[in-house]
Length: 389
Image (tube, rainbow, N blue to C red; front, side, top):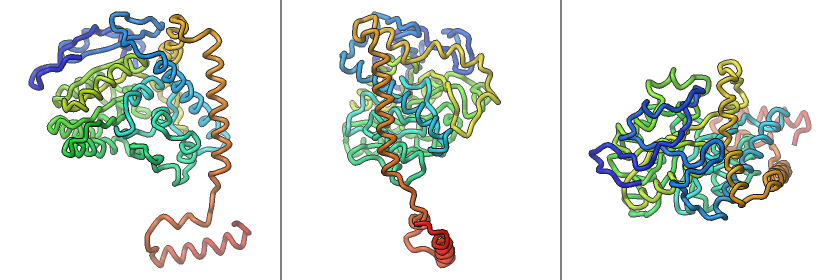
C-alpha cells in the first residue's frame, strides 16, 4: 500500500475484488457506489475459497494454521458460552458468530509491546492476545477478577459503553509517540459506535497528532436493532476516515488473508511514524447482539442467509485443503480439539469462580459510608440467619 501525500486523496493500489455488499443488504457489491480513487477496497480470498494469486500475501504455513485454529477456537467458545447462558450458568454474553476472521486478523500482527483496546465482542482476539478461556468465562459471569488483563498483556479492559474506549486508546497512542515508543495501538468498535461523538474526536486527535493507532470499524450492519441505513447517511464508513485525513481502507472482514494483510501494513505504518489508519471491515453479525436480544424481532432471516455462504472459517478451510495445508479430515479433528479445550476451561472456571455473597459490599468504597455499613450489617445478619457462608 503506497504512501499518499496527507493533503491528497488516498490512491487505490490494488483491485477492489469482490468486497461484500453492505451488511444489511443481500445484493452485490457496487464498485461505483464509492470513489475508488479515494478509498481502497481489498479482498484476497473470496467466499468460495478462491485466492487472487496477484494479491497472495505469502504468509507462512505456521501462521495460517495458527490463525485458522484460533478462529475455530473462537467459534467453539462462542457456542459454549451461548449454551451456558441459556442454561443459567453464565451471565449476559455478546456472541461473535461469523466475525472470527475480522477479530483474529486485527490482532494477528500485534506484538507483546503493542496495545489492544477491545470492544465487548472481542473474545477471540483476547484469547489470541493471551487471555485464558476460563478468565473470560469469569469475566462474563460477573466476577471482578475476570476483568483486569492478564499479567504482561497490554490490553485495556473492554467497555460496555459504546465507543467510550476509543478516545483512551488514542490517548495511549499519542503518549507512545511522545515517548518515542516504536509500537502501536489497535482499537475496535462496531458501526453503531461511529454515531458516537467520542469516535469522531478520536479520529481527529489521531490525525492531527499522527498517533500510531489503527481504528478497526467492524461494520456488521446492525447497531443493536438499528439497521445501518437508519443510523448513517453512508454505508461506506471508510469515507469518514478520509474526511479526517486518516489513511483509510475498506476490506472484506470475512476474508482472513485480507484482514491479516491490511492490519500488518497498518501496524507497520503506525510503527514507522506514518500515523493512524482506519480499517472498515465489512462483516455481518450472524447471531444475537447479546443474549438479552432477539434479532428475529427486527431482522428478516433472508438478510442472514447470504452471509452463511460467506463464512470466514469455511472459506479458509476450503483453500487450506485445496492447497494441501490441511487434510480432508483435519477440520473436524480441529473442531473437536477446540471444543474439548473449551470444556476443559469450563471445568477450571467452575472450580475457581465461587460466588461469595458476603463480599458484595467490599469493592464499593475505600471507606464505606455509615449508611451502607448499616445496610451491610443487616445483610450479613440475614445471611447468618439462613446459614449462608
